[in-house]
Length: 486
Ligand code: SAH
Ligand code: SF4
Ligand code: F3S
Image 1: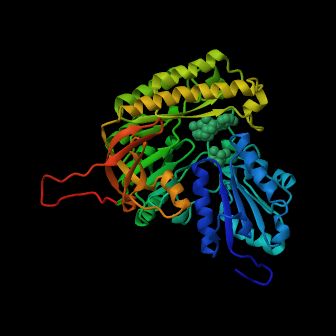
Image 2: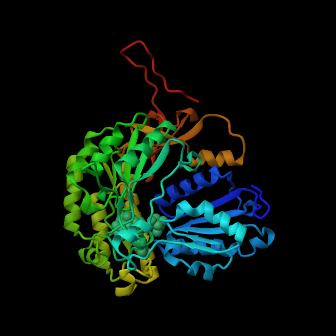
Image 3: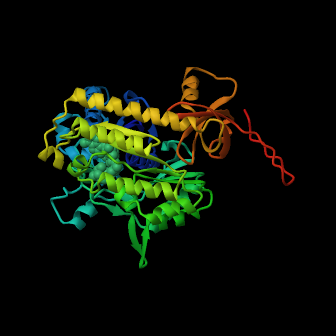
């Protein structure tokens, strides 16, 4: 990695915060840089290239990155050729403000310009110039021009950056058009655009050839997917049907669903295509109509209930999870209670609960006072978490004694921690997920990763099923099928 004017050690450190879309973007950026000879390091002090892939959805996520940047203030003194880049949603949202707050940053690259990262890094290093590459503001130009400036970046794949070698994300919808009043995503990710089915299918085939068994289709409103190709309209249900045919793929998931776009054709596809996970993430955000209206979610609690009923009748065994915001502007104790009631009624598998964080540039920030005190937000958050945990624990307990089919992911967190402390002997603790997205831990041979295994559940926690591998002899036919044990 040496040229006269452009010397660096080829080591890249990248920190990623935010949603799965960001994890995918980081995988793709790292893939492009590896092609140029870079290698990853987990030690920023050893890296001549430092990237942060950022999130703006809550203030806390931004703080985390600005603090990390603050710690690097003097690091260029030791490494004059170091390049520090801020990528993703906060780059798009804060733009040149990033340079003001962290003058040692060289690059600010939005979600729509990630393809330019390798070239921008080289330019920054050789010319020691700052670069700002972002998309157009949504109010700045017409829809087509703005959409064009948010280029989808879905090139080569980087197996080493995946959560596990057998699992991969595939982007199908870029951006968002829902404009919920609290949310920055329509600004940071741009207009909603569905990628062509042809490209998506091709990508899944490449991944399957690389050994991927589980594909998770991504979109902020993944079920709003719509694309006309060769005169035919493709919805998410059509896409699932096509991907279902790809050899090697064992499981298909998609996140996140928008309640109003949860159509029957999609539910029927999940019912009829056996590779589809029996799992739907459909955030409600609140159980109170006044709050939903202020959030501009476009549905009422009654609408959500109707949709939930259709899920239950078409997919009786599917797990449904949700997101909730507590302490949104004007949320009264009664409004909060209505959210708790919705959780009790729907018995979500799990809920991601967030304290409202006012975001400059959003409608809620402009129109409504952030009038729920922090301690009340905290207390509502804890109360909701407690209720959800109780429901999750009760529902998980119903699995004790059952045999579940699990797609094995690899070592469990406990096992990885043990391995960090030194050599481990005896069987390994593995982790995997059921089709209904429940995490299962059990002892087994690590070679099982990427395959399906039958596990009998012995015990549970609110988040995890704990079990053992079922060893079974096949009754019919000549072969005896025994799972590989450690
Ligand atoms: N597109 C997805 C989620 C996007 S962001 C959807 O519509 O469901 C992930 C979650 O962050 C949201 O579901 C919401 O619960 C939460 N969130 C978004 N903006 C927030 C804010 N300003 N304060 C607190 N939580 C927020
Ligand atoms: Fe944000 Fe709403 Fe779009 Fe989700 S649907 S990304 S919450 S604006
Ligand atoms: Fe955050 Fe951007 Fe995802 S704001 S939640 S990283 S789309």
